[in-house]
Every structure is written in structure tokens, then in C-alpha cells.
Image 1 (cartoon, rainbow, N blue to C red):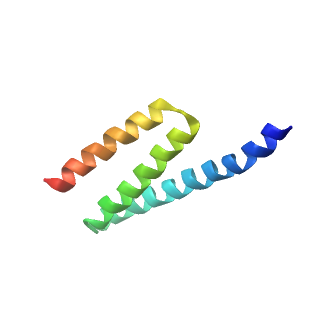
Image 2: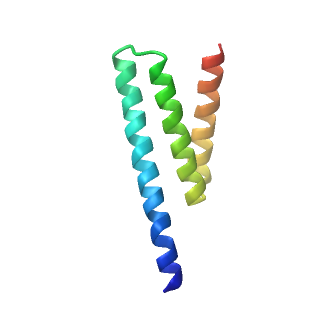
Length: 80
């Protein structure tokens, strides 16, 4: 019973982060469609970091890996 009470706020945090990160990534796609650079890249970076955090909270290595690789690729792209 106590563990259920403690997990509820955590689930709420995960829910909020994953939907916020998804919304920001959608804004990144929209910015790309309208040619708003480099804003699109910054939006994607925020979304990627958010989804990486979700992967950490879920202890989901696949989510962490794909978003870490995407984050590294985008960082290299920004530096180029």
C-alpha cells in the first residue's frame, strides 16, 4: 500500500515529462517544416533530453540508447 502511494507522483512526473517532450519534438518538426533554423534543432534537443530522462525513469535502456545517439548526432551537427 505504501509503495503504491509513493509510485503515484513518480508516474505523474513520467507522464508529464514524456508528453511535454513529445510536444516539444512536434514543435521541432513544425519548425523544420517552416524552415525555422536553428530553432528546430534546439527544440529537438529539448525533446531528446526529455525522452532520455523518461528512459532513465523507466530504466529502459532502449529508449536511453536511441535518444543518446540522436543527441550525440545533433550535437555534432550543431558543431559542424
